[in-house]
Length: 262
Image 1 (tube, rainbow, N blue to C red):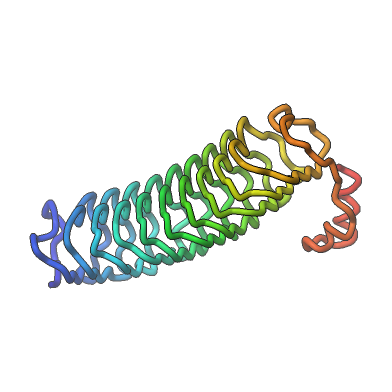
Image 2 (image 1 turned 180 degrees about the vertical axis):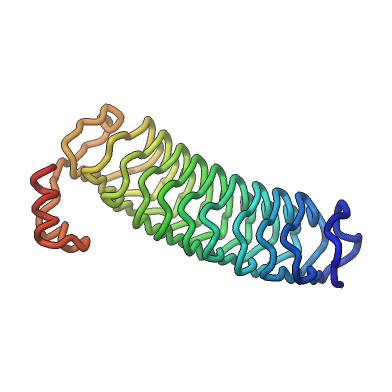
């Protein structure tokens, strides 16, 4: 069914296949919420998907976000049946609880996303891998209880929020990059399989109970600041070697500068 007018309160009852008219720019708040739609075509003219727009659409498994989309609202796809999602180039942040409780979500391509807001992927239980290659900020509870999440690429992350990976039980190794300056309270709490952790020399803040209820066998810290919050662990203080820095992509000159500063 083609929908020419999104000014009404919600999608007509019983509709399962929806085609939104070309030229539409906004999908209103809660328009498809809790509906039985199974497929929706969104034209590239759409620039905004408002809060709760597709929340609770349990039969909606796949959706292609429009090319020129700029903004997505809070809870937009929460509790839906979405299995994979690719963010278009213009979307820079994933809003609060956008995909929370999407228990079938398995694949995510964040593209140019720089910020993941509070609870964005909370309890996405089938998610196994996440590439945060352009993400700078991970807000509180972003991946809370993503039980099957195992592999994380932190590339450019600067801050990791409270409880952001709390309950991610399949993570085994953490190699936090030198971009990271802050790891907040309980960030990796209840990650029961973590055995090996490397923390960078760039850290300015490490919160409380960051690794609570884990079974860490080895924690290597590359810096010199003694964080009281790490006192309960047998921390190995091992500054970066020249070779390690060059393996990360630093030039010889840059690596020598890092070594002198640290």
